[in-house]
Length: 142
Image (cartoon, rainbow, N blue to C red; front, side, top):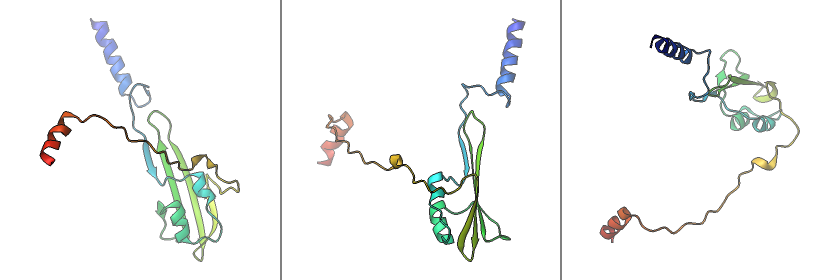
């Protein structure tokens, strides 16, 4: 009996520890900051205005009052049972025009793949029998 209590106490201690990640414990994904993709970064071109950059990338997470010509985009994702992933992108402006991009992603000249295009699928309506509730409410609505 005493061995069972010690075993249960040890398992409870291990399962509550932050260092030991048990695969059967559900942990939610934590997304923070500006979500940006390589396709979004590829749209950035030198000479774009701040409004155009904000349209493509969204408003920046950090706008430094001392450096008004620098916008910082930071995205952090911590999937449930995995390590945290963080991406950073800095856009630099001069006279309200984009002059440079720094960070983890760079604009590339290769076109984005067409595999991500939106596709509309028409699903036909299925004729089903009325439920009891629909039959009862149908009597009073006529």
